[in-house]
Structures are given as C-alpha cells and as structure tokens.
Length: 325
Image (cartoon, rainbow, N blue to C red):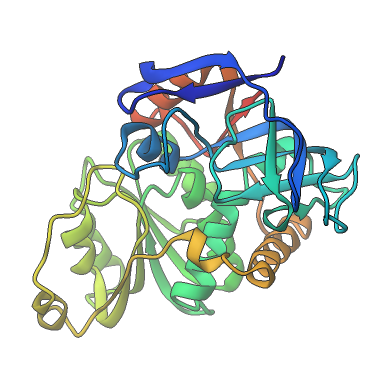
C-alpha cells in the first residue's frame, strides 16, 4: 500500500498525517503517476490552514510534483507508461507516493531535467514566467523590486530578470540570503530588517522608483511596496506570507501615481493547455541554456512534511524545497 500526507481538518502542521493511500486506477483522461519528488510551496500552507479552502476534507494537499507514468486511463494518447512527467497546479494531491491526475495537466520532461529538479522548479518557475511575461513584460533597462529575493520564486525571478537585462532590487532577511540573492542576479539586495526598503529603493533609483514590484509577502510590505513604484508602475501581489492584505481604498493608487495593481495566480495563467505548455517550454529553455539555475536548498522525506512546513513558515528555507516520497 502506498502512503500519502492527508489532512482531516485545517490547522497547524500537526494536522498532517502519514497514512495509507490507494489512488486507484486512472479514470478516463487520467494518468496514474509514480512520484519521485514533490515540491513544497507556500500555497500548501494556505491549503493546510484553510486560508485557501479545499473542495473537501479529508484531502491530500500539494500542487507540484514529478515522476514516471505508471498507467494511463481511457482516451489518453499523449503519454504512455515510463514517460517522465511533471506538473504544477490544480487539482491538489501531490503529497503522495502515487497519485492519479488529469493528463492535460502534465508536461513531458526533457532528458536534461531530473524529476527532483523539476519538482523544485515547475510551480516557482512557471510563476516567474507569468510574473516577468504576463503581469508586466520585463525588458532590458527595466527596474524591478522582488521581495523574498532568496526564496523559491525570488531566486528564479532574479536570474531570469537579470537574463532579460533588467536591474534587479530584492529584499532579504539576512546577510547570508543577501549574498545568495546577489549570486543569482540581484544587483541590489536590501536587508529589510536593517533598512527601510522603500527609502533604499528611492536611493537606488535616484527618486524615480521601479517599474514593477513583485510582492509575495503581503500585509507587512504591501503599502510600502506601492511607495517604491514610478508613476504608472505595476504592483503585482502574488502571495501573502505575512498575512492577508487589509481592504484598501482604490483611490490610493491614483494618489500614488496612477498605479496598476494585479493579484494573479498560476492557475489562471496556465488554465488552457497551450498556455501551460508555453510556460513550461519557456522555463525549460532558460534552464537548459543555463540562464536560470534551480537551487534545491533543502530536501525532506515526504513523511516529514510537517517539519518542512514549520521551516518554510519560519523563513528558515532557502531556494526551493523538495519532499522525497
């Protein structure tokens, strides 16, 4: 019998239980996948706590993984047993040794990318792709601010934006993470515990502000992030690690320079299969050419997912985190 992490109620890390799990045979349009690696993401925490409600409980959480196709259901022609594949996004169910998943949510892995590497890059890497291409099309000469620059998404955004020719400013929590961010293409790391990041951004940009802010922190940084933007700049709020952003008067956007604000999700940007494949293709391209290196900062046994969640919430992780079933 295979195993999975299942939650029967929302709450802290302790609600995650390591239990027997039989995914059954793949249904029509589905693939049964033997998972070799699972990605850890902050949205997993949101599902575990109930901030983002799951369709039903009990449930297996997790939105990212990679492995080998074991069997396919009726109507599946794009994949066959033995294919190496990866995925990121709905439906949940990644925290398992075996799972069934709709075939249209899978992408085939190039030979050059391992399943462990894929589990550390699919959700974060495709997020970086829609941030840099969809929410605001970053080009050479643009100035960007990325919060949590040494985190899973931040590490990829710094490299990819640098590859595009942008000037990258990033916030980090320690000197060690500042060094890591700089190594990954962040030209101006800011230690947010030691300096006012909005003031530092103004200094770095000679008072102009940045073209776009990418903010996954949320409550603690949102309003100051607006102060970092140039007139008609773009605020991209794509997470809330510090808590939900309180309701705001949209007139603030006009007062601060006719700003643009978006709250995107990977699920929307990759809802159509052609968009999913385009995101994956662009990600694989920058990784294969060496423009983006995927940093697996730490690995845990899937059975130890509760400890991994504690470390993620305590901001003790660096780069991507992979759970090994």
